[in-house]
Amino acid sequence: MEKLPLTRAGQQMLDAELKKLKSEERPSVIRAIAEAREHGDLSENAEYHAAREKQSFIEGRIKEIESILARAEIIDPAKLSGSVKFGATVTVVDEDTEEERTYQIVGEAEADLEKGLLNIKAPLARALIGKDEGDSVEVRTPGGARSYEILSIRYG
Image 1: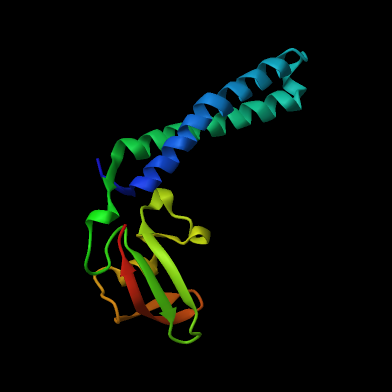
Image 2: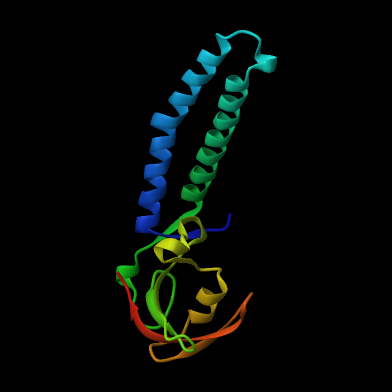
């Protein structure tokens, strides 16, 4: 079974989501299904079908999170240093627009670009891995090739 890299923060985020799904969402949808059943004929009961659909989603997400956590390899970025690798927080500047961005390279399960959490499988992350401060990398994007310079690398 393939191990999935995950930061401690990513593990805590998934643990919290799992706890909420099991302790709040699951009981809530079970109550909604029971209430909808009381309305009689299930074949034309929209509330019942919506609640069952939501239940299916919740159960699927619980299984997905449990699978991720079971295969997770927790990596503590604070114990790392040197060139860019998993867990690094990297500040780059777009060499064309001079726009600075900061990303932490994380596992697929915790990636969220809006929060600056860059999936390790993303083209930019793959280009940054193994590079050092001051290095330039070129990344092919749907909008064409972009060049970035690494301004800083932090861990922890």
